[in-house]
Image 1 (cartoon, rainbow, N blue to C red):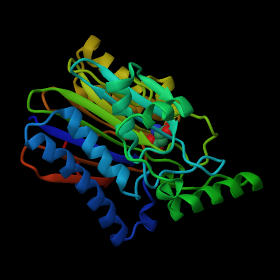
Image 2: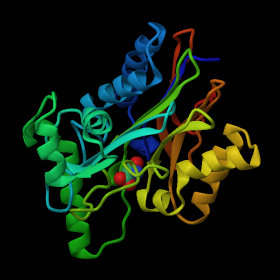
Image 3: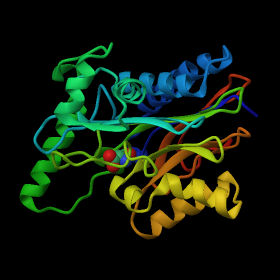
Length: 313
Ligand code: ASP
């Protein structure tokens, strides 16, 4: 029952063999911090929109996750971040693509939604608008992590030598996202990402594309996706879940699981978090794992990484 918040820290986790207890505990602590940040908003009567914004900010600030600080690099060795936020009350939406500068790309997306008159802004034009907004900015060095830089070097070397791609999913991509249903039954979604490791400069993923990686509509559901973005765009993944609920009367769980399973059949690895206005939560994925969590009215934070982690959705 509402209020409830669900988050992901990206589909595509480290292989079990590389995941030490210390690293695992650290990921779970990062997820819990984001759950509590969002829950604090909901518990004090705040909106789903503010809750998902705060949860995603916490994940962006945590260098373990591929968004904000700790984002992956393009093949040219810089960051191009995508982020989106959508309000289920009225389908208000804002997104940025291919930017680096604002400390929290999700706040840049919110500024687009609330102050630009646009839905999606990219590159230099977006930055020019955002400079006039009340946002914290950071130098490229702030976003840099050695782990992501080394992952880029390994991938560039692999491409040069034409070797097979044996990377684990966590090295290829990641994303963070949150969905919430507040006490009034209003829904919201937010997603933020550095995209795919060594992506082509100018490439935009599914996260800032509404109906693909991000969606929120009180009449159906709020969804935030993670995975191989090109597939989520081509399959209109988040909107497809809403459409199945709206037109076929499917439950949130059935619609979400069907879409994730369909993506798997075409090679679209990934997953998503979703919530409906009754407070039902779905956390399906088809990858090795997905960093994920949920927190309900009781304030108990649940986190999961691998498939065998018990689902509490
Ligand atoms: N969906 C993101 C993108 O394609 C990456 C990810 O979620 O892993 O940019």
